[in-house]
Image (cartoon, rainbow, N blue to C red; front, top):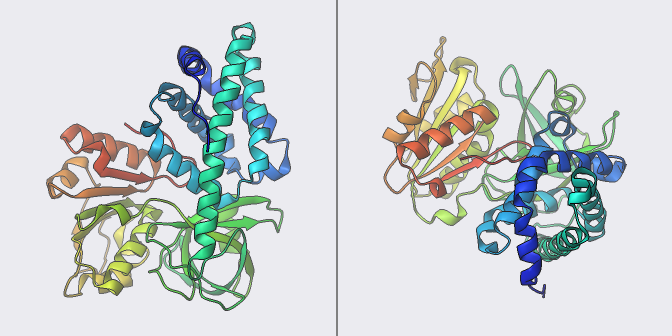
Length: 396
């Protein structure tokens, strides 16, 4: 069992908060520059998020939050759960924690210089080791749990691309089945799969939301082609039926599991609809009574992916309410309500039941604006959940 931090250590770490507020990004940027020299560690990170600064920003925010709440660890619970899910997805090993710790402490010393006294360095060393021990224990528990359940496995498992389906001009779905032909773990709708891509010049890991209902046969992911995205272009241009992919078990906590029977409003834009497709299809398959509403925005709803499935869902006796926003074009989605223009926080607020939870997924600016708007209108932040594709970041 991890021993609590000494009070003196906690006080010293909290005293560094002003320095982290001023120099946190410089510290994490320096840290990553050191870590990226190790190809095995570099492969675990989204290099686009490294290049655009999202990952250093996200870690700087996490380090600052740790310092602020180090004396009240219960306030870090949701953040720790997210970190554990991300670490398990890319298979972070216990032996890699000291490597990261050395890089972090080295970056603190490099950036703060003489201000990083021996006392500060010692305190942050203890604080990092304490956090590492907590994460290692939790991750070991998750590894064990997901390998023990029916269909579960540990680390990598080989899957074959069974079929490709063109969902729209920019979105293609890939159906994946295990080559060992054994059952697969039934995922929680909203979770994602992580892939090890080490071919055709790639050496990276990438995660994609599962867009199919839970089953024991396989999974569907749906990938939007990004003209500037190396990995999404590879999926569209290079990945063919019959090809083999290495995959870790489903991960993620962007799910409806903790809601009980509370209503849920699923608000998405663009490819952000993928985790919600899994939720909607699962609700149909399981005949769930939970009230669901999908609010989706796209540039042109006549060209959006999953039209046939959504139209079918909308005609079911216990159909979820489906509202589409965007250019209406010449669509034939008469079974769904279409609105011109963009989704606004006020519209969502006006259509949310008092006890409902709101789930948000889509472009970062869309999510940020919606979350801030909804909380300003009076929805509790704890009832608004979000999922960023890539590095997470603080939202009001």
